Structure formats: structure tokens, C-alpha cells
Image 1 (cartoon, rainbow, N blue to C red):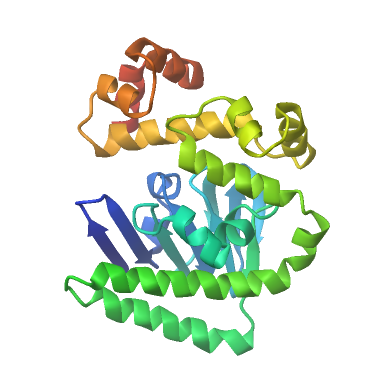
Image 2: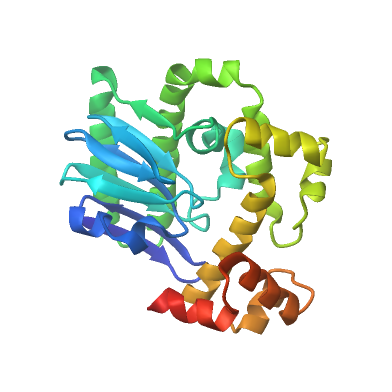
Length: 279
């Protein structure tokens, strides 16, 4: 099964699939989407940023576009939910459900929650509601799918608040991590320096760097650069924009600054990097 909703006018996409061959695709799993993996079967082995992770029966795992995922073993009992920010804007909904704080950016490790018996029927019913709505091809389908996804995330967040509450309470510093990631998501086109984000958070750059290092996270500067490079990849793959157009869209002062950034981050020129994406 593979169910896909797209709105080309705004570039939004939401997808649910349990096709194991499709889920194994390297290109699929390392794209620019938020992903929720629901394991309804036996234990599976994953590599998240080269760190081994076990996903047990009836567990859900939450990934951001920044995280690199590889599957070492998988069967047909995995369900993958994936969506981009154009479909479900995490900035707009974060205040409503705190989904990023708990599910995606809340702790120093990959967040995993377990669905126990009292919640299994509810998740099963919601799954079939998704399937039913994917069959409705009308002008409110996108809105209805968004509502269902929001409901799904809220349910996961409520469980996460119970199961991960000790982690969050013991490590209140992670709210700074969450805020930083959201600020990067909102401002990466115009703010490139760590100092800019440190000022918004009322922290010193050194304090931020030390905090991320303390919990073995990517450095704040690396997160900023990775987000910009992620958008460059997306525009090169999914738009007809030239390198010059991309450079100005992302707020570079000149195409030469854009070229320098790409070469510093990838080791190759923008043209070579673009060609490598489609190979």
C-alpha cells in the first residue's frame, strides 16, 4: 500500500506506505521530510546518524529531515508516515501541540514511544480513517488529511508526555535546543550566523555551543548550514531554478558567495553537486 497526497500549487506532500521495498529506498529515507515510523511487527534494526537503534513491536519513532536513516532489517509490518512543512507547518502548530519539543527535538536521543493495549484500537481506527480519506478526491481532502495528521501527532504527544516526561524534566535545557531548531527553520533564509540565533535566545554563542556539545548534538553552526544545504538540495531536485536564482532566494549576497558555501559544505561546485543529486 502506498497512499500519496500532493498539492503542486504549494508543493505540499503527505504519504503513508507499508511497502517494505519502497521504505528501504535510500533516496526516500534521506529526503527533506519529517517521518514517523510505526512498527507493528517484530523488532527491526535501524541506523540513525550511524547510531544503532532497535524499534520494538508497537513502537513509533520520529525523525526530522536533518537525521540520516538506514534500515538494516525490515518487514511488511512497518508503516511510514512522511510529510513536508508545506503540508503540515510545524512552526504554526508547535504552540498547539508542542509536537517538535517532545517528538522530534525534545531529547538528545531519537524519541521512541510505545503503544500499549489501551491505545492500540485508537491508533488502528485512526489508520483506517487515513485510508478512507485518501480515497476522497475532493477539494477539501488536503484539509481533512491535515486534521487527521494533527490528531495523530497530538495522540503521540500525549503519550510522549507520559513516557518521556522524566527525560524532559531532568533536562530542561532541551527547550533551548527545541527553540533553536525552530528559529533556524523560521529564519535560515536570512540569518546564517550563530550570533544571530544566540541573540534571539538571549544566550551567548559559547553557551549554545557548549550546550549542544554537552549532549553530543550537531553544533549549532552545523545545524544552520545543514538546513541551508537541505533547502539547496530541495530546490535543485524539485524546482527549475538556476543556481543564481537559488542563491538569491536563500539570501546569499551574490552567486559567488553561494558557490563558495556549496563548495565548503560539499567539496564540489554547485554544478557538480547538482549533477550528483540526479545520478
